[in-house]
Image 1 (tube, rainbow, N blue to C red):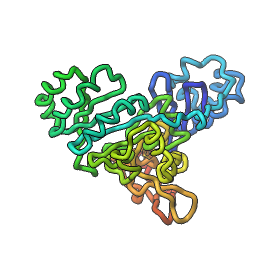
Image 2 (image 1 turned 180 degrees about the vertical axis):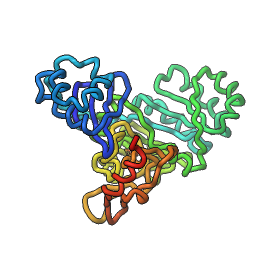
Image 3 (image 1 turned 45 degrees about the vertical axis):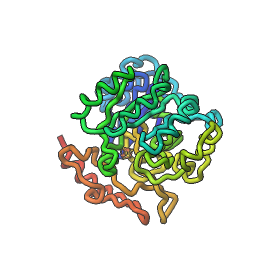
Length: 343
Ligand code: SF4
């Protein structure tokens, strides 16, 4: 990853690269040849001399919107600042989520004041059966800037819950998540978001797990819906210090500190600095390589998403990744890419 300007970054993938315009939230694809030239911009007097000396990709470079804005004198390549871990507040969580249920509503009532001080993003997830529990939380809903209500269920139920939600004058977001369907939920990942915060985070931590906790319907504290983390039980948690202590869990620390650049396959993916995934990375047996057991629905070796024509699974491209090996058959991939992208 190379930084051009504070808000303009480029990241190289196996097949193509991405230019991130982090202030606008946009991104553009560019060839890996263009990436190499932009990576060495500091060697040119200015952008025009770079274009003259790289005539074969000059049109491509000129077509990049983010560069058009800054196509005057470019001489500095800034080093992207890393997150200073010591600045991380011990009591801070990026997001805390409660799955609201009969058995844990009392713990939500007890902890909601503490939680609002620990995070800017406090999510309460309700299904159809438990949306009535909003009544029990009425005192906490008013003026709670950090609280977000999420209704999970079928879209057709939205009308039915409308009167309950509007009675409390809260804004309720809708997520088409079936709280009993793990496979379908996991299929909704990875999610891509192009912003400064996530970009920085993916350089230093695992964005799917970093500074997040989720209290399941049974009171078990995990990180995301359906994961198998057990950081404790909400019945034992009462104070800010109790919540802080969840973060010292050894497995939690291990997972949040795995960077996307360490994960086999993801490290070859041009989307890696804008990607949030919740599949748990694992250590392989054969080296220090980290891998994810379930395959992503994006294949970075052929630049195709699962829903796109021409998509193939990794093994069909000659990429083997498991606990014992990580092998990339560049010849086979080159042949496939020629067929897929020759035009
Ligand atoms: S391969 Fe998938 S999970 Fe990995 S960085 Fe790319 S999009 Fe994200």
